[in-house]
Image (cartoon, rainbow, N blue to C red; front, side, top):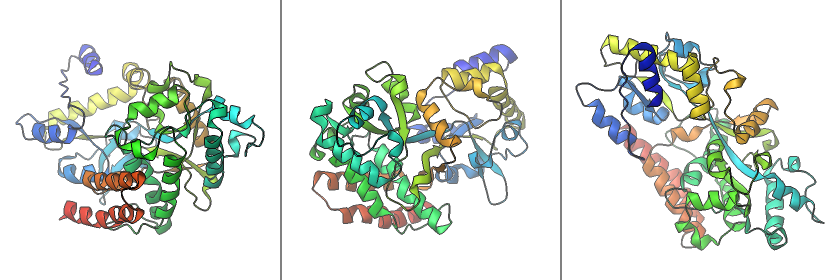
Length: 392
């Protein structure tokens, strides 16, 4: 909203910003789009979100903001080559770790690694986490991993972000970028990383239903856990506590797949700008001018990078526009060392209901009130059901 005010001050062009309460964006967008003066700029969360709004998306292929994009990897392009959406923020997630605590562990006789750089696959990650869990009292911590909470503030880290890993490897093996029916090829790998999270933890699995995202962030930030699955955006929840900036590192989420020693972090976006093709031509042009100003002007770039803390996919954002976030530095190191980034395939998950059913099955399994077969059924059978419901 402040950025819009600056634009109006500089250009005299009024910009109205409509905000939605947490978790109600899609509902708010539908309501606003039904009005006579509908928004000219909105966002979708990827291919699934685009499927709902594709008829409202202006082709951005001739726009300045598209020409400033570093790669088509950050654009939603349809079968006809029309650019329907452009990502405006790149985010990265993996396993955040406390370098100091990990090095304290390494200093103990019998440590299974000599350096954090030795963790390059699931087998090593598991050996380290198991040993840390066994020696947690000696290290003065509560557990190897921060709690894998399934409260609504936390469960997305597992039913969406962790579930991306078996999906990524299945898509990669089959040479596809979406599907109407997943096979579940890598669900055994999904099970073993999830088992590690809930076993080598700060709390018993029976307590996970009530554990929040704030709990997990606090456990890590206060030095009670060595590892914490989350993304670069979590820095704000960590800084200013017990973990110094220089002690923040990131590891890929290893699940035991052949060749994973070359795997990088999970990098992508689910925030895409779209311009309303149904709006008057002069409003469309005004919106394109605004987007160009956002990614090319000093005020726009400073706002996105320094005030909002975004890493963007635009060539206009040179190194001085990197936010001051050590997790971004760690992510950048993986980008530069030749590792293969894991793409965000969770944007193709067929519905929120699919995620919710998967999350419920995972929690039941973790608590011991359900079995892994129910997780597999939610993942595979639920996908086919929800995909069909969404596309009929």
